[in-house]
Length: 242
Image (cartoon, rainbow, N blue to C red; front, side, top):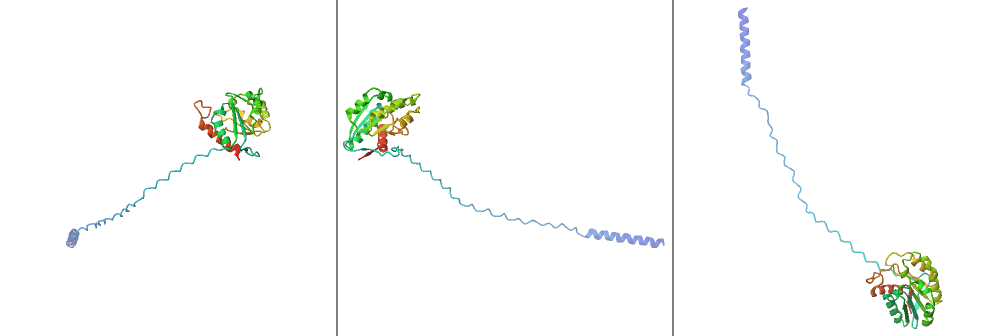
């Protein structure tokens, strides 16, 4: 029994040894290695030629506004100037500026006669007192009268106090057609323009306050060119040539 047992153990050892040798004889399997295939990069889009932006057109300069010529008061026809019409113009120093010069040229060009008298620094008070205005009207016998007053009253503190003098002047002109040319202020006035506009009826009133005039060195009186601008606006707004 011992011999048989020893033989069995020897056989087991032989088999174990043979199995171990067989295991060692098998080559180790190298892990499979897959080399990644390089992926081609997507081609970059070809640059697109971009046209330079067109320059925006420069805005056209706006045309300068035409000077507004005040129209004759509604319901009143323009004053007709024809051959033989006698025109009297009186007032302050604005009479002898380009205003009076150009209006005289206009009247004479129509065959009329033009008379003018200026009292520098005069006001409605000056022309309402005494008989100077009545005598002037009697002497010149005008068909049409033009009044140029209130420039020296633009800054009086109580312009309404001048209303009686304005009415007196209008009364002394009589029933003949007349035009009161309001002043063209060179700085804000105190209200005399409105007073004259309302109290100079039935004379027509020409509002000069919206005009831009070229003025002389004193900044007050218009130059000949500025006076011409003034006179042309008055002529277009209040008179008609026949």
